[in-house]
Amino acid sequence: MNKVNEAGYNEAPKFGPSQNNPPYVSDNFQIGPNGAYEHNEIVHIQQQLIDLLYSQVIDLSMMSKIELGDDVIAEIKRLKQLINE
Image (spheres, rainbow, N blue to C red):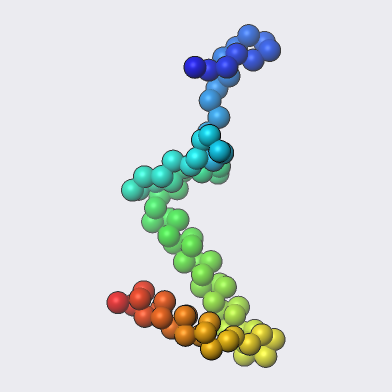
């Protein structure tokens, strides 16, 4: 049942993630605070972010600004192998 505001009108239900109203997720769409996105679009955006971060890590390691541990390198190789299977 909708709440009634001070002016006596029914308040519209609020959408978006919260404790009582988590984001709706389906096979094709996810509805979040910024609207609905198709699953493929979300995956594409996530891949763009991964690619950007990966290239930054490579650049920083080549400039000797950061050094990746052997465990991190092994995990990167393992995950890339899973993706390529």
